[in-house]
Length: 255
Ligand code: APR
Image 1 (cartoon, helix red, strand yellow):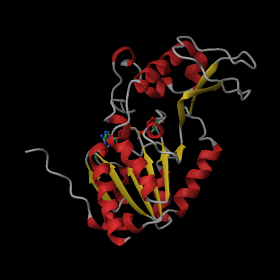
Image 2: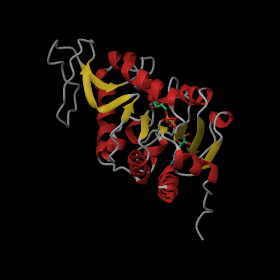
Image 3: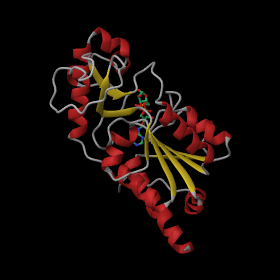
């Protein structure tokens, strides 16, 4: 006998079956079943002695670009070897099932796009893009493996990963697109995020205050309990495919 199956609340399935504008906000928990470690679980191996907060900052890169770059190369290797899991694929299916579906992700691993999601707002950037650290604006594809941080082809400064570091602002176009989607949505699904880091975590409260129904999928409780009307406790790779199939069946019944 496997684990007891988390029931899908009828109210949630019913709402998703009729909603025209749905937003999903994902965090590292969605990629956990692809073997990509989440942010707040202990780092492993060579990087066990570091916390992400010590490496993912402009100051850390300025002080020691080679170490920070090597950490990102390790993460790129990890992600390149990973595959989207059923949770990523279910979210890609949601996009074709719900016309006004928008995916906002805090993840930089690119797994949503690899699973087929097209309308993805990468709130914290992407591991596989690189841009000039001096801010000359140059972006460059860096052939991998690239053990040493490359130089900017435009100004000669170090190139840095195209991700949002602690203390840095969310790219304005991503922030504006995310806020616009959240302000207009009828339903927000918050999946696999500890909801500790703003402004991403603030999007759930913003949706709730704009009158949207909020549902959370997580293996453990988070600070969103007061905001989410529904909480599905369990792994997103198991719950999301079941949710998509239930919504698809309900939509076909109505069509
Ligand atoms: N299914 C659903 N949820 C899961 C699963 C799973 N299989 N595995 C873990 N989780 C949940 C954890 O319970 C936790 O709430 O995913 C969440 C992961 O939280 P974090 O590691 O804090 O990752 P995240 O919320 O994405 O962090 C947000 O903080 O460190 C910065 O920029 C970084 O994007 C990151 C942001």
